[in-house]
Image (cartoon, rainbow, N blue to C red; front, side, top):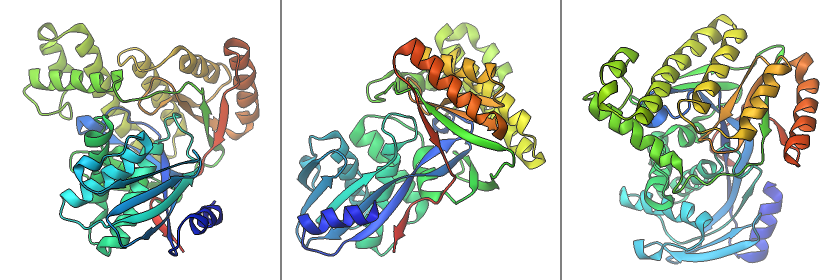
Amino acid sequence: MKEQLESVFKARFTETPRVYSAAGRINLIGEHTDYNDGYVFPGAIDKVIIAAIAPNGTDRVNVVAADLNEETSFGLNEEDAPAEQWARYIFGVAREIIKRGGKVGGFDAVFGGNVPLGAGLSSSAALESCFAFALNDIFNDNAIDKFELARIGQSTEHNYCGVNCGIMDQFASIFGKEGQLVRLDCRSMEHEYYPFKPEGYSLVLIDSRVKHELKDSPYNRRRESCERVAAALGMKTLRDATMEGLEAVKDRISDEDYHRARFVIGEKERVLAVCDALKRGDYETVGEMMYKTHEGLSGDYAVSCEELDFLNDIARKTGVTGSRIMGGGFGGCTINLVKDELVDNFVNTARNEFEARYGHAPVVYDVVISEGARRLE
């Protein structure tokens, strides 16, 4: 992919580019907890966005989206925002760097990748992280630290793409390490790496091919529910909320908000339980927590869909250790922790039964925990 993008760049532009990569991510457990200042447990994967980039000495940005066969050009002032949604991620990253006092000049770029769109693997965060890392290297001599690069990607979502997301996706894309998951405290930004090479188990993603757009979706309304409950509890977020506290304010909040908060409080505890289980090598407990998370996402948080629940049922039926929705919801993938000897039967059953029910087969991805944002030599 790197060589192909370099070839497209050299055919379209005159400069010699530098090439950068940033990864999509999986999240073993901890959904919708990041914007509640809770814990998450993600890792970068070997599905990436790669960009060839070079400064051009002007005040214009020219970008080719190789996979889409589209290109656009825009300036670097606020009023220059491009119309194309994919370009707004790049424009937003540049603007957020500038707003923080960093430097960004005109540049030419060609990008592409193999992070599946709409599958819950955070292709948008990979795109943001790739360009944030690159522009920091090219124009700022890496003066902006990695934490701020993650925040730049998050602010891009908030201010230019209409998604009021937490920090997890960008953090995982920037900070990922090969063969390691990272438990992130989204309030303090303290993080700890956990080796994740479970012997006898595989991580399998089943993409329902139900696509979702998080902008103007129920995603933002879930966050608003959490904020209302936190306010009722006299807290900034649900990070320190307890089930007892939630029950105490149940008559002051809507039934819908109660259920949203109940999921988040339970999910916070499940992340910590998974961390303890991994230290013991107890993957059965990890799997049990994954199933409980799916139940909560489908019931209390109501971000599942019929197709994802169907895949989760197949996982249970075929003896999969753990399975759940991954990502914001409303489509995308399930993440499955599967004993190696059961993988083939699970995958074949999922493909055949899903296609018989919905008229198309799901897509299966093998994932490897990989490196985060970096320059490719």
